[in-house]
Length: 168
Image (tube, rainbow, N blue to C red; front, side, top):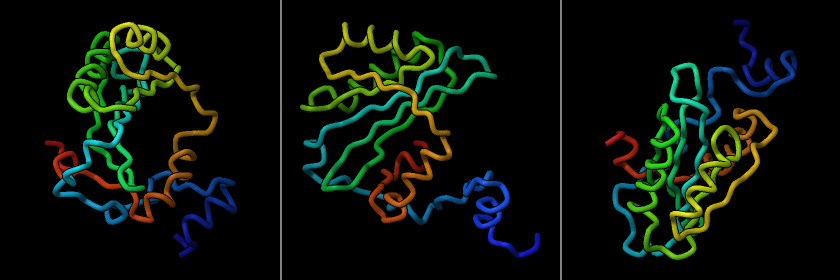
């Protein structure tokens, strides 16, 4: 290490301003919420899903994140990162819907239309009374997409619910 700032090094020499080991945000960038405001559950809930092809260990895991926008802040309510079969993925989404969004107006499920996403969207549309949207897989890499959100995270506008931070 020659003392050069890692962001500078990757930007200038690697033509990529992202560190390969992370470092874009730290734990201190998130506000930890210990008590949810009384009117919080009036906010629409969004369940965002990144599906996978199979539950094998060499496949990407399924990602399901439950979020809400409340008073201009983003609250991460719950998340699941697991290797799941197709039927298990569908069940996890339905469970998240029933637990968090079942009675809240304007809530929605957003599913990436990659892997099994198309099928998940079609099946959920026929079985759940909620807006279910498919979205195209973005062209940018996951690190690049995350880097684009770091300003919002570093501004303290993304809140983590204490239970979920501990994985309880």
